[in-house]
Image 1 (cartoon, rainbow, N blue to C red):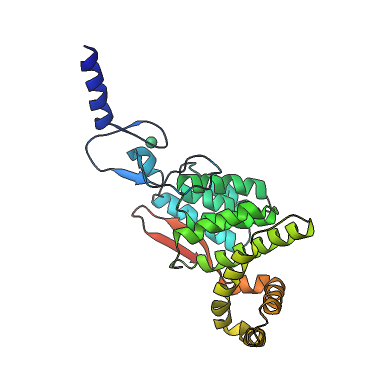
Image 2: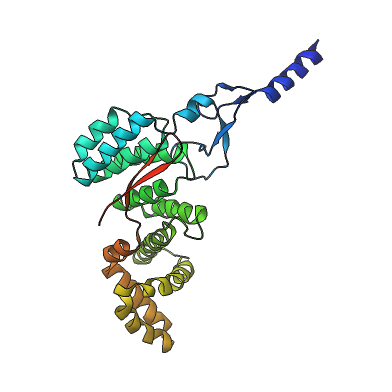
Length: 278
Ligand SMILES: [Zn+2]
């Protein structure tokens, strides 16, 4: 009898997958759904795809009515009417929709409510650990909160998820990560603590240099820096380069960050993008 029960249990575990979000049983037949659900809120871990039930899956995208609301929200955001955008989002908000959490977080950033923004980015990256833009913007919030260590982890995820910069977020993530590492390194030196970051920072600076010098706007400045390389005065060049990046931090990011303000995933998984002029 015991053996029978045991074998039935084994059968059951073969027959049913548990939904990674609601822990409900997943129907054996029919379409299977998967998503990169995280291990816990606030974790930096990038996970593989996990099974989802049909109900939880359907809540990840927007129906036509929601797409309409999202379009309204994007217009309100472009007009910088953030409290109105938040009210409109609240009327359709679904806690299991990664995009809703991402957009809510973006609105809170614009309202300078960084703790709130972080809560929603945490949820967005928990519901989809491959959510590149959410990692990027979450990293920015950590910078605003002067938590450079956590920011570095967020930017690292962007780099891991899109090493070839197909989605255009990796390059700015590398720049932001580099500047965070420089800050962590300099703080350690100032406080008399050891730092083993200088090699990584130098590698990033060298990686970044040709890409940045391609941008027309920075060509002149870089041709001046170049003479330091040619003179093989590497240390001097590094110092100049870091100063240059610090002085031009915002304008460099203006040049290299994608202009997408807002993104909506429609019922057919079609992505509607809204661009904004910086
Ligand atoms: Zn479920």
